[in-house]
Length: 261
Image (cartoon, rainbow, N blue to C red):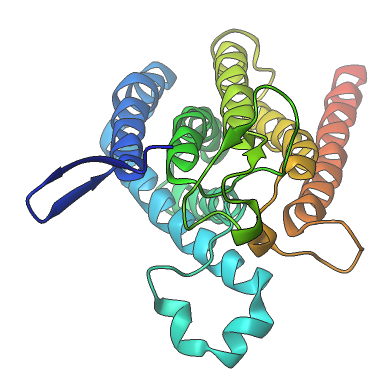
């Protein structure tokens, strides 16, 4: 599509970068800050936790990307630290979640209330960020004969798929995440049953969505795990959904038993 927004002399403004700058700005001022204030948490402490969560997420993103193609990086260890190193999104929310749990406990903040705010913020970031992926050509879809197929010439597209109409899977995910953002924000503000409720809903809903969306992904770099035709992200989605479902029903059962006493 349009990987370059504009050029100014030697400076090249990449659309992907600017869209992510917009995403970070909107996420902070329109989502994170007002939700933290409304929750009654200390804003400065929450901001520090959020910054740490972002850093942990970026590291988790890269680490999981390396692990998904570990045999390659084992042979080329220097490339683990390169700019073009493979990344895997799932590493971000997982690493960010565990960082927030640890940090908030150390700083005496309500951990699950913080993760609830974090995942709602993340939903909007994902929704906007995937638009950036679309313009860059990364995380692209499989070939399609449907009228909405988009041809991409980006070097990030698999060579065999360049110039071929592809599923705009980045936009599919963006639409899903916008819907999830509005839905989870409503639950957080009006219908949350307990701290951590929204966090559970996010991981469960995203696991289902990502599992389905992976069938439309055409970038082989994301890797496969053990089971044929099951991508790394689908494998993680199954594990996460199972874990969340178990924790959710355990929580509901505990609440029911408490009410019966």
